[in-house]
Image (cartoon, rainbow, N blue to C red):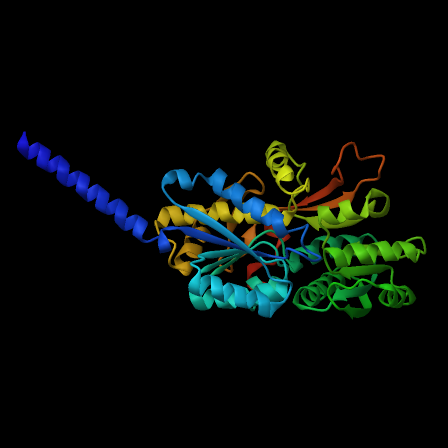
Length: 405
């Protein structure tokens, strides 16, 4: 009897030691998430505070804390400046114990953060930035790119509009990494579909007056004016194009990156008929509606964008990897584990993460409803077609990522 008690005691001690060892591999005994976003400028509604809400919901829905892991979320405003974003990322990694950075809706900032994350061997879950270079020439073993990218947008919207008769294009392009990548990728898609680009103009980010740029586009006589911008820049350019009567004059506006918050800001009277590509719509099915019903009251009534959905889905996959490894200290190992497991979440469904860090899931070509077609608040989209996951994103062999064998 005494021998049995000693054996049971030994097993209990061994079990406690195992748990202690497993938990000791969580840096600082807490999984610390840094939401790095635009909290005050042109991307704040499509990401911003809503990305913090999405991160909190991911923690809750993953059940990670009920499994014995402690999680903490911090947030900061990168102000759309790569130097500011880099400084925050370094401080978070070096002295504040952040293990993973999420969101980052600015490609210039995101490319800088990706480099720092690799240097520090942490994890970057990019759901906000667009540049396809994150899984191309600038790919990293520590970065996973969720939600969308410029290649996907270009080949969804650019190809569809060109094939529908939009054979000549003029670009109004945000003058930083995202805008240039989007123009580059859309140009390739347009030319592949038989169209041509007749001109372009670069515009500083967060521009208020688009009149001179729109006049250049109007005088080009291009059938399509491609807006290679996002957020407030997109809504400002569309509103001012309406004032100039550009669409009434026979030219078509192509919003190459449009979020539901942009449509909401424009109003259906102005936005109706816009065609663009997205990977998430809150009203697609019961699961997306349930998520959105919980999300909106926590973010000023804003319905979730695909960036918010990407923050949520990427963290669910991250938590699965950390739980499986019982370790959050080695960024490369965590990302490798994320890639080894299929993705499956309520918002994007089943998918996978390729070796270049690209998360694969379907995309959707949508058209904005007319005011008469909309039956409720935020009822804005008609889904025109579904682009399968294996067609929505750039082929692995074409990206130039050094991680691809």
